[in-house]
Image (cartoon, rainbow, N blue to C red; front, side, top):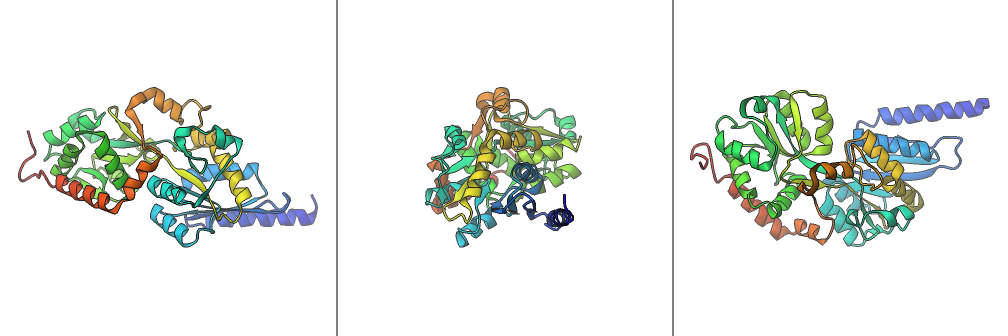
Length: 365
């Protein structure tokens, strides 16, 4: 290698390292390697935290060193608003906000991917050939060891309801869940569970009976569980909870055995993507066996690819839990989640049921 080539390579390495270090956990930049040919830009806007995204991006960049990759991580709401303001700013959009992603595709903002990988993708995990579910993430409970030692195992929604009714004072303020008013994820889970479980509203009333704390994110729930402030977390995003629980022996992750919602992150290529060829290259990787293997082996997101088996795959989770898994359906039903009148009605009932019982009036026998 010539001296000039070494200088260019050194500059590239410094630039890449600076981009990663200076990202302030919001942006990653993988510069095109200087000797790999003309750079091919790729801009990804996502609601996927960097620890989960980084392995995927690193593996993709190793396979395609000519790609100059910029990854911006935003909240689901900020991601959606930015897209509507500048629909030509990103090449790929990834988000766990399934209703919002579906509406964008349904409104004509996505362009089709007709590659071999896209045609082979499971029909239940795509809409047309425009919107692709690339993860399989159960919604879980997290239980602190103090709860188990005092009250016994917690394995299902039915168990949780029984404990809340039996121990309202002992559990007062010690249970945490999403606030569906403040959290899009919490609202989505609420509307899905209200359709799924005949005892859902009794459970919400019981949560109110123990004055369960209502928060906006899975991260807030996990922080309180790690410190022992909370004994039970209800409806956490399993992909984020799994890594935290693995590092804290006092915590146990529970995929409820009676039923477990499964959410999926959805990806699409905007119709106005500035670099559509590179976008197709990345989306092919994301739903191809190589990218899905990274998801299975290096993240907690859950791989969908039907050829993959073993830990970290949808197939393994289905083998263990079978019909108890209830993936949120990718289809027109998601649009009901965004209907203002239905949202107001569901939140009004949620609030009413949450206030039905109290420590003062007493929970039902």
